[in-house]
Length: 518
Image 1 (tube, helix red, strand yellow):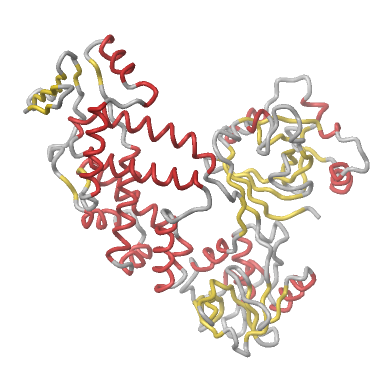
Image 2 (cartoon, rainbow, N blue to C red; image 1 turned 180 degrees about the vertical axis):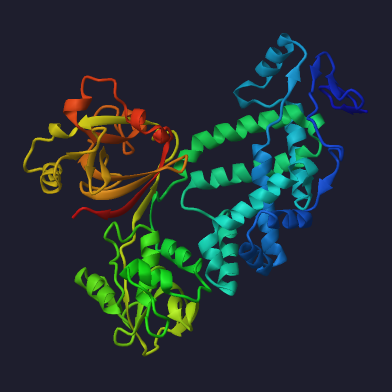
């Protein structure tokens, strides 16, 4: 067959899978496919079933409670992400042709022919949003659908009705109006690019060159505008402890919660009240007891006293609770964890209620509710690429000003080193970083791209006015963490942090403030 316009004549040979453009010799390499062929497709409904294969039984149950339209939104989002990541290859029959093709399409310039094809593809895609994916990527799309669904774990768990609503809100929020023009530009680019690529995948052997052009356009524009997406890099959220608590839902014995908190034997549910122990266990799973954010208490009075001393206990009626707050009942009779407020009711997850861990709902005006403990949850900072790829170190002995917080921290905690010469305070590595992540004495959990967590305490602050230092760190942000070490054993040697900890050979992607030494 032939495709003609005023500028080119394109001849396609189905048998050899080649495309010959008049006066040019270009060959498209056909991607390998299964016996089903490039035309064999898997419908969105089938993709839902494939996605279930990557879910746990509990996740499947919640998945099936979603409406058809909600499940389809997850599938379509997964399809878009998968298509973007699929790599396509092209080859030219000679070097001269390749150079000519490259020059003709340089600087993201599109020939008239390319523009017409892309515009036509966009129109086709717009009318075909329900088109299934090719069989070869169905498993990948199914797995991606399950992951996207699973990533909304906390919101999805809150309750059947509320969970559906929040899942819907999450998807809508992906495309709603945002605070900055840059965000809107990137959202439109990514959406259009994904739609076009979904359509052209169906005619991949024909439009391969144009897919490459579109990939270049999208990548360049995302690089230009992507850095402006992050309006708020800091978040404070009590959803983590709610997520931990909800995973315990249905447990009918308080034994493990009691033993964690008290260290003694558990008798039975009626003789051994364990509601506060449940809260302590959940807090510990999040690292909040170690950081001093929560007490380790088996009694409601202990919680009220701990948070009251910090000015973080609020009387019922004068305060609207938030996710992660602790709800207190009666005269130190019972305690639970707040999930959310809906209308005039507060939804909770509690231990030792009805013989186990279950969700409960109360009117905000319920006289049995006496108040709320309101923890100051940790600050979370995501570190964007390309920052956080290197480490450095400094001698702890170089801190010499007695009036500085750095000096006072060392005096109070003691200047202690581990066997490799790393400074340590209460089992945490002493580090230096910019004030983006906190102040001297703050406990920071650094998460690396490979999943490793470095538990640290800030022992020194890096000056952002130094040459080559920005808000993320030194070396133009490449060095986020500077380890505080023993000057006597490190200086003048070839030592480097990853010599002792090869698991740290990964980019720093997140800083989680979990408490303070003071």
